[in-house]
Amino acid sequence: MAPLEGQYILIIGGSSGMGFAVAKLALASGAKVAIASSSADKVQDAVSRLSGGGGHAQASGHVVTTTRDGIQQQQQPLDHVINTAGRGVPKPISEIDMGSVNELARLPLFVPLLIGKLAPRFLKAGPNSSIIFASGQVAEKPASPEEVAEAYIYLVKNTDATGSNVSSNGGVILK
Ligand SMILES: NC(=O)c1ccc[n+]([C@@H]2O[C@H](COP(=O)([O-])OP(=O)(O)OC[C@H]3O[C@@H](n4cnc5c(N)ncnc54)[C@H](OP(=O)(O)O)[C@@H]3O)[C@@H](O)[C@H]2O)c1
Image (cartoon, rainbow, N blue to C red):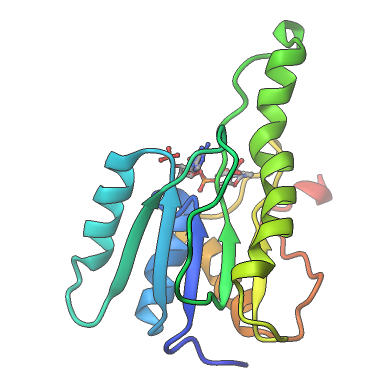
């Protein structure tokens, strides 16, 4: 498996939950990490917590929005892009309309499609780079963010895991 030392990882949704846990683990493994999410306060707080360990932690933060087209310039090529950005289901199905359906699909569907289009422009070419997406269903109850983060590190390191799906669901499919 490829080492993480010196690799540059962008984690969209890295200011809390699974993304934050992945950022912590990646930094501890010697990677350089950029996190991104929509709240400037959350990004700032997360970067300061990620850098709090001192040592050689290399964390930076960026504010992104899914309501605007366009992309910032990225000077340094990335080794991996991870997307864990998500929001809870906003309303019950009896109350949805076209507007809320579009809103609901934005992060789990539209954003991954655009990341799939745009990320290769900023990734190093070759089999060591990766794009990793979080997905899930309401019924799935994954383990703690720290435990799930190990799976992301596995996918980042395993250059042969192309197209793989790693699941953490509390055994829901057995019920
Ligand atoms: N935890 C679970 O039980 C579970 C189960 C199944 C699936 N999932 C899925 O896994 C993903 C992450 O879960 P989590 O527990 O880590 O969630 P979380 O702790 O709420 O973290 C979500 C992250 O996404 C960011 N985000 C939300 N909206 C954004 C936007 N419009 N643009 C950019 N960033 C945005 C948040 O930061 P800001 O608020 O700053 O934007 C935060 O960093 C979600 O897609 C969730 O649906 C989770």
